[in-house]
Length: 116
Length: 113
Image (cartoon, rainbow over all chains, first blue to last red):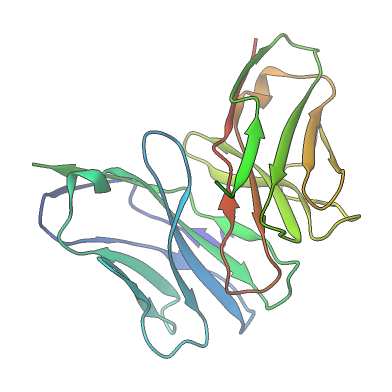
């Protein structure tokens, strides 16, 4: 079974609108971390936001927030007030356990296109 | 600027040729990783090194070898390149600890013909 599932291959949004990118995960480990990365057309991987499994509040970083629903095992990324520069591929990823030896497992990504 | 440096950025190989992808980080991170990215597949882990002196297989290790030369450097070797290894390769590093993401290099686009 896939550990990280991103069901939206592509999303379209108009500038200044909010958009939600879906991510569900599968783990039996009570300790884990969830990450979102952005990959613009230039190819680099940019870290956006992190949510720990024990964090009580949803993580926020500027226009990015993570809608963490633990019981549903979902960690959706919400981008408020979309900008043209938000057009990119977005990856959800998970790191299980609190060992320093755990590795990030990525989903297949969602391509976001922001139109004027 | 501090970060992860990968070389080369682009490479074309003939089937059967060998090459080594180089990666170096200057952030004093303990752990380093090699991923490959293919269209529609996300990033898949090839090998990783949790700390200097150790290496472990990831999800897709076949056809690759790695060397953790020292704390800074982690190289990926293709001994006999195959067209299926055409991909974009990313090196990444991270300090110890759960709540930290990886810092990625800019990637190497490899084509095997």
